[in-house]
Image (cartoon, rainbow, N blue to C red; front, side):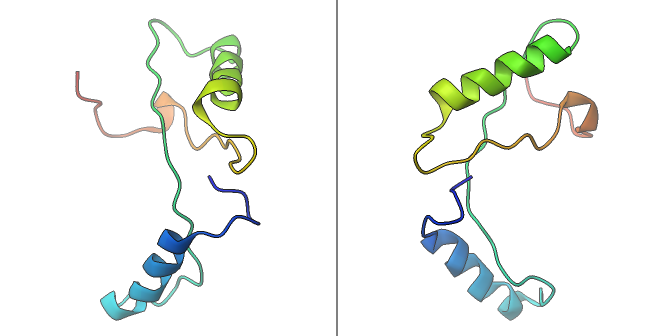
Length: 82
């Protein structure tokens, strides 16, 4: 996700349009990006640590982005296409 001090024009455009579509509960929005990493076997603490390290060193720009963990595979209800 973009760091809080980084301007987010996409997020601002989204939050302006939400009330027009009947979504009045939201006061802000931030646009980010997401990577999905697949592993064979169980998702262990070591695998999660490696994923975080990959995200912090390769998949993100640490100057303007923060890495956040949203969910692991056990939290996902939908099937991931092959």
